[in-house]
Amino acid sequence: MRALPGLRGLRGPPPALRLPLLLLCLLAGERGSWADGNTTASPLTSLPIPEVMMTKYSNLSLKSHNISLTEHSSVPVEKNITLERPSAVELTCQFTTSGDVNSVNVTWKKGDEQLKNYHVNATEGILYTQYKFSIINSEQLGSYSCFFEEEKERRGTFNFGVPEVQRKNKPLITYVGDSVVLVCKCRHCAPLNWTWYSGNRSVQVPLDVHMNEKYAINGTNANETRLKIMQLSEDDKGSYWCHAMFQLGESQESVELVVISYLVPLKPFLGIVVEVILLVAIILFCEMHTQKKKMHTDDGKEFEQVEQLKSDDSNGIENNAPRHRKNEAMSQ
Image (cartoon, rainbow, N blue to C red; front, side):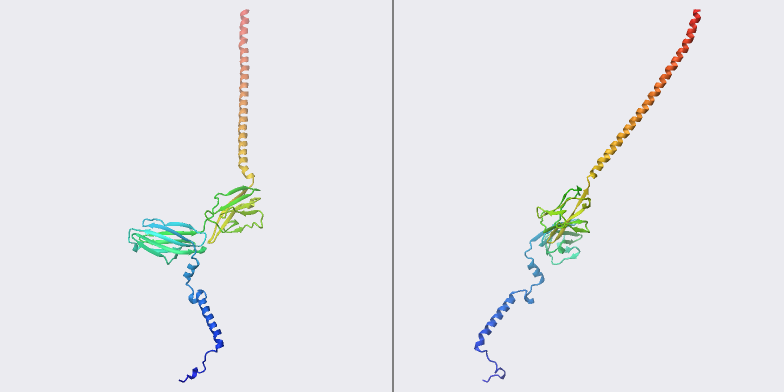
């Protein structure tokens, strides 16, 4: 049998090169198997985006919340929920009706945005709908609502936000030259960091405790912060804002500080003293005027009495003169 002309020159490798070539083939096979095991090395083996997200955040804690509605519900039902850190969320709405549950239209919205990928299940007279998602940043906070449209629309809303900071509602009043401590707290939460600002809501200036010895910031617990302001002046009055930082955002609240001088509390007292002095002066003036008027009245009465006595005396003398004359005539 003759060999084909084109294959006459093809021969196997020399015996000395067979072993190195075999090792190279084995290494190439192992390298390929490693590449197949790494899902990110080749675009053909990468996971879809939703699955990647679920795998990345599979260790998030699950938060489940429910709202119940009926066909007699006249007002929307709302539920406020606070989150400090990224979480997996499961929202369930239950709607009870005496009509046909299959005729009820169910929708979900985040604000005004229509949501998808929610589940609906119906039993006898009860309709269930569930929406699952993950909150991993502040943009995903907000209001999530379920809608049941029958003859009327019924709505249940879940409001998500970071924990709120609490402070005293009344302004804090202190005096010039004193020191004051402003306190902010967060119940049942532990912020990552606290910061203080001065100013109003639109313009806030951070307080640098390292550059200004007038301020000192400390806190006994992670859920509390204290701002101490020393050597107060009237320029220190105004609003002071405390910011609590969380993984999903921040929460803020203001404390109103009023600084007054020691003369300010004395002003009402001085006003009362002036009023008392004026009242006493008016009383004394009235008394003096009454006494003078009484003295003039008494002087007039004495004068009339003197005049009366004089007139009586003169009348007595005139009456005695005819008597003397009559007596003299009789004696003669």
